Image (cartoon, rainbow, N blue to C red; front, side):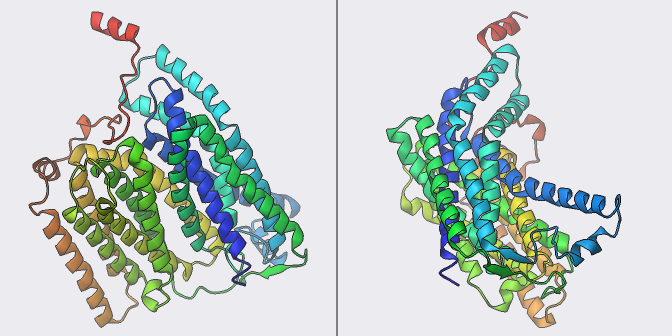
Length: 509
């Protein structure tokens, strides 16, 4: 059985590789094609949103189609259609109770082929869409926030087809990596490793070929996945079936606080994206060094996810264990902030150690949350897809808005301290809401969370914080002075988007 899951893991790595190559190649291609270039964080944030759309929208559309078909078949909208669905053996949240793995492989082959085709023609569509973008820039006056919205919509229009299909293919791989063909969170680890390798490869290709050629090269891993999946889908016996867990099976643990647990998992994923964004700017990395920095952070995040999923003891499946892991990750973030050097001229491997430790701790906490949700979810397929889409969407929002806003108002070091405080506070909230532990064990874990929060406060208010960061952290939020056009250090500077003629007319008035 372990050998049968190896092709699915390899497909997850290749899909992650294609995603990383496409996103980072687009950072150069769109920046070169637009009027004054769009910031890399806009490209990365819009790409994460496109992946989230691919994970969630087709599944919800399929559920709607199946529900509508059953209502029509049962005579115009019977409210008890779910009973008929269960009698027919159909699971509207995922797939039939008994599924054919060759069918999954054939679906993955088609999705990967479509992703490769759309990725191959992305340079052409990017030229057309950026041409419209440039004409709008030249024809109208733009302030900071509408300009950011225009850039986001422009990039989203470019990547929604290739990355939307790629997100759907990644969702399919999560089913193939599971022995019951339901959902396996370990596929996220393989995709993250592939994305890290794709970013590094895109950084190398950017030095030897044009950005458009690098974008086109991202289609090659998709074609490899398509051919391999087609071979596996046709070579396996058509009668090979995987028995899914009975829909009537009771989860192993009681889901007392479903909204809190699921929201906490999404928030920790957003915290990981925030840490990666802020650490990249805090280390003073130039735009050319971004692939190296983000590759190291993503590999550390994947290592933390792997370590957390290897934990088979009871704390990994407990909400209080998830809370303690969140508090420890906040402690790791603030300790890394304390020992790191500020604004390095050259990014070295030693300088990346604090950032990698922080990302690894956040990844471990995220995996604990996924394990806690797995034993409480009645439908692992639906719950896993919903959580993956939410994590990608929250990460995109963090890269686009939250992290730049925090850096602009508070500074890099204070933003990391605030992230650490948020993780520690989230851990305390989770521990407080879990009442099924033994009272003595619950007190011990709550004491660990309080100790982590005290250490975070002590270190965060220490003397290692710069005068500007301490002043910004202690001052009130001046949100009215914050523009959406703030950029992180290391990003290519963007000139004013107001055309010269319009600027002169404004000056004349």
